[in-house]
Length: 264
Ligand code: KIV
Image (cartoon, rainbow, N blue to C red; front, side, top):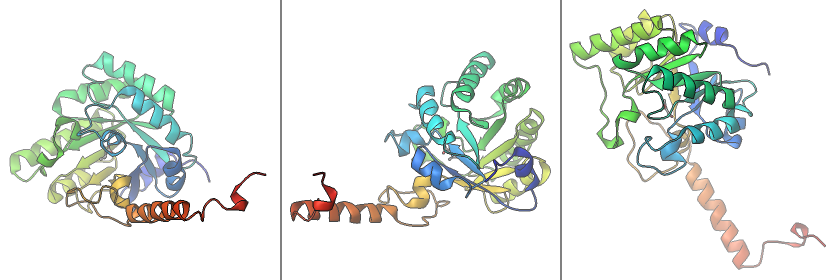
């Protein structure tokens, strides 16, 4: 299968929903490749892979390592790698780290959590040939406790600010924009006024595409309270528990390994 291009993704706007899921490892990248348009190596790996309380402890090295593993195995889907917390506090720092992350992972896009204060950074990275995905609305790096996350854009003043931020980010050169937990009416308006695609997470069906964290659709961590925008599409935790249980029983009953599993 041929590698998807940005032009192709752009052409889906107003025509066909764009799909995106996160991946942090080779096996998941191989499963997603060619199925979804975009694979995101998200800094959500801090919580999903490393068991951190939030994403603030994620380092550039973690993103490089997981990014490399995923991008190498994404032959057809396009890839986005996240810039971790405190790696883009000013233009100079952002460009140095962005170039390092892109050159070591070879990801197609770089995502940064954006607000009014760092539009200049998006512009600077774009001018320096980095394909930037902006992330607005609820931006997880601002939260030390995810349970405090609330949707945004309900009142008129917030809605206006989000609309103007989205437009400014497009003008600054963003190639795509992630809308997280944004009120449905506002997400729809942003999607309509921008010519770049919007990818929603908890921001309604009116976005040009949808992204979710892979662990959530697989129903890992089933006993933790999840935001209402998450849907479990299967229960992998259950299948893994079943396999582990059978393995333990088989070893204890001396049913595994058999002769065919042994070297003689
Ligand atoms: O890090 C991540 O996985 C993300 C998604 C939640 C959009 O930013």
